Length: 336
Image (cartoon, rainbow, N blue to C red; front, side):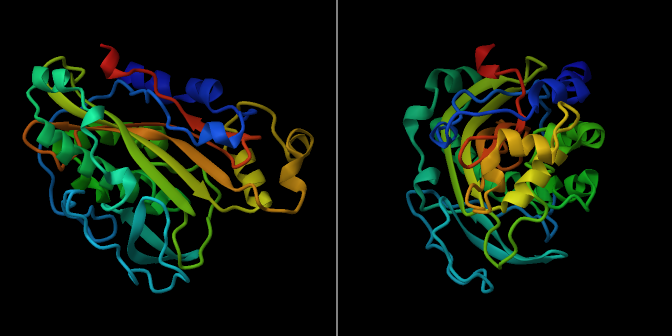
């Protein structure tokens, strides 16, 4: 298992996967991520403990059929209260860079709506899951993706060690899953382990009291049953899609691109001036787009604690001219 993970996330993976390059136009980036691939680090089952205040998961979300009202005023320092896509305000957060609004899934949004058409009923029957469990798993998966995967404290702040954040986030995971992931996080980091988005965006992002993302769109394109790597443990897997827009100055994008190069090419401000002149035109209107998704898996009996997590995404300028970073695990369990 470690050998497979090392292949996905070690230095060799950076050389192959995270190269800065030219992308298709933004319209291509904003499509659903398609068949999101899954790394081969599947975990065993268990139950979650009590949540710490800083990164505590939300309580079980109500069914999209009976949505809760959109939170208004949950982030009083923000000039507006949305809309911000498929997320709503959760709480105001202040860190060393300023104040921002932490967000969570808007259960009344289109992205949160459960669509039975994306459920593979045959695989659910094969592995002992029901469509009601699929709906519950979708809610839990999207809450994790919006609150932790896309909006953790480490999104644009690397001052806290990955292992420290992961320990505080243990309530999101089954105890066995958390134990199995901990050494991967310690060795490769949260980003490469596919747990959250981190260490890729400008640091810090905007601190104006509102969310760090301008717009967050989430969805689910497949829910299916499969087996864990042990070929014994049934897993209910929710394959999500995400597209997130961030405001960023040209200077911040250039700094992030050079920082995120990770040794793949000889990238400099001069080379970027030649390849991507729009980053030096003073307009600051390109912004950044993160497109991809998370796979979130749950074991039988507990559809609130995560049994399996992985991610695949690209980060590029809003005009599609420059890819800054990418995570691309390689194994899709639906192909087994």
